[in-house]
Length: 335
Ligand code: SF4
Image 1: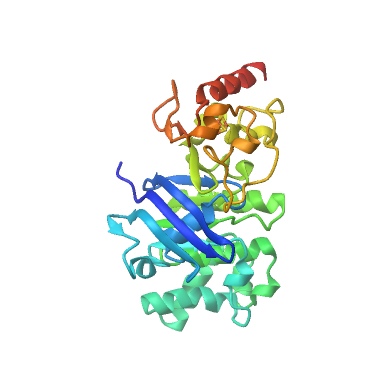
Image 2: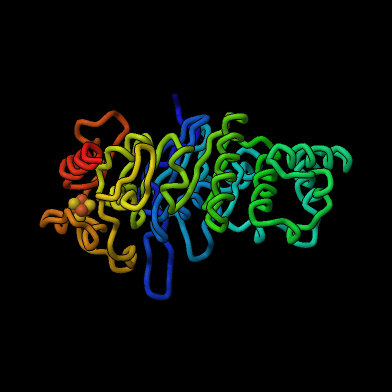
């Protein structure tokens, strides 16, 4: 199936007082129609900047796209003005903090209805009816009464539902959700994820979930793209990557996440902190934290290659993939 979104060799740089930082360094991935892809990584891995590039909202003047391509439905999203035209209509987004995206002085029903008034020419009455319908679809209890409430009168989880309603107003083909549950407690996180998964299936839209939390996306994503220091280090079908991690970063992230087939306590969680992008080590950026590192890792940067012996689409950027895979097998069989 041809991709709805295709990102190739994307490179995004930021100018800082200390020098130029490459926040995204050659990232490539596809999102098929109706597919849910998790962009996963720690803070500073480049996942949110990648999303900003897709949406055409890389902060200027500090940030700039210096290479690569982003195609959406055959259109060049990096061409001036293209992303702006599609944003909200075909490509919608949900952010971590709904309060910063909602206007505190307008009632939520008015804010959701405004999408229909502005983009569809709906009357006030029609817009209110559409807003009510959407609030019901995203599971806001007593939606009719809550139409006239202000954002601060909603809990964090309910505000995120309002944001999701606004994002869905124009029936987008692609929804990008950047850490949509990070600010919420665990129970509400699960509810919002269930909601996103249900809506994704109902609408048949593609969904890109950006998160640092592997556990959050375990049950909803089809594929995962793991980023580290601006680069894609592993990608593949989510179950395949969970069960047969081919990169030490992935197996480290999973060290504390009990998922799919039970606990994986035997894996060692990642030590250390994400790297300073202004002072990356030679060779592999993950090297200072990697228990598999050997001399070649300091000499050459690994490239993303098919994981040996694994199904199509599972790729990893590591000189010692075979060892990592073998260890992952051992953990599975011992568990
Ligand atoms: Fe570790 Fe070397 Fe693989 Fe990098 S290339 S993840 S340092 S084993």
